[in-house]
Length: 139
Image (tube, rainbow, N blue to C red; front, side, top):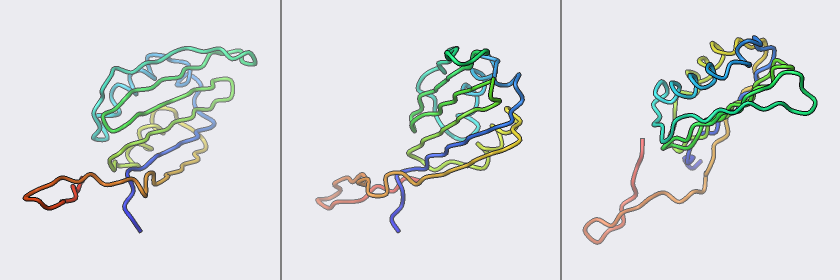
């Protein structure tokens, strides 16, 4: 099997502690600190917005941080005690550590975790060295 371009982690966390889903600062701080904790590099500061859906009584928050490796996005739904999370990276990262940090923050009762290997057929970077094509290996 070919090596993937990178992993895409998705988490559906339900039964979360509601106060963790309604704090804009909590979400901002998580998006601000998590990249460094899993070996990624922020390209921007996190961007977090409040949103009240037509059917909701309590506003939720959506936040994203752009990374040199790709992105981390979080969407909270406090009335349902639910949060959707995804991390896409062009480099491998410690998925278990990321999951544990999200679980510690949101305190869910249930976790649905998926990891998809993205870009299986993505062309690997190459360079010309001494008139020979050399594949670049990234770790």
